[in-house]
Image 1: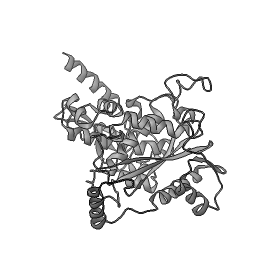
Image 2: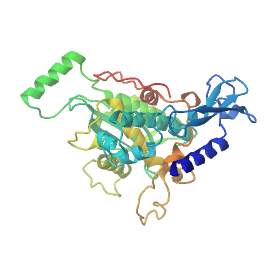
Image 3: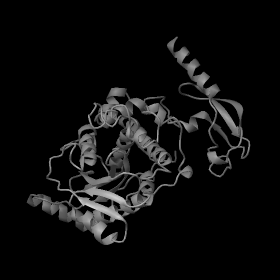
Image 4: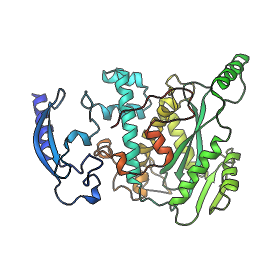
Length: 381
């Protein structure tokens, strides 16, 4: 009886659903701003092998493309109904992919595929929401150091965070060469890898920092106010590469106590939460990412969760009594409420509807030129 009731409710939702745009990228009705009036007609139902077993079909009046309601949803082309919200919840709580698979009673491959698709959808949705966003606050910038596949492949995820809003505006990736004390065997293995693949670029942090700062400058009305630690690569990017740009650069010692009075608190807090909550970023973990894109997928999902799906802080603070009621996205008037999982993933965004920067485009297309291992390309979604 419960199954019959849930099927009935889902079919009622299907009957009420109105396509927001045509999924055919070459159609005049693909972009919402070009649509005038009702552009579609209903053309019956299609049988499915999974819940809810039938799906409403539509046809575009302009290009005559036929499509179903599921093309706009996160469960598009998924053989198992649901589970996305639970997979996302367990992921942000630091549960590994294998343990998540055991919890939901499905394969690890299903969990991995769902997280990959969610990260790609989140990338596009975030760019759609921030398309017109201008920066009107100081930016705190730092790199979160981690490794992918092995400790011979360390890296930095450089991220720019609003000093007051705690909104993650932008981030990118910089591969690093292993440093520090190593055993004789580790030195030999490092030399073998560098002989086979070559060294990672020694100025990767500087070049990725320059790209990111240039994008931030494009969002600023006047000058960019920037807080970083005293990393020499950041100084070179600002003082040499971007010397003619209007940047106010404040350098803060990383040895200062990391409480809320620290000017780097916004980025330190996010790094702390990432280490605490995400399995691939924990110290000495066996749940490390197997390649760089998988690690960036985890960071992407955490970024959209922090930006839109949770308050700035769970508790109140005398400096900001409303901090437990507003998300960073609400602080910047991007959204009107703290979004749930279903709110954020309610409607699909196509890559032809947004303009991604070069780093985001590489993440979406799963491209990492400096990677020492092959990264499987994802099918079109």
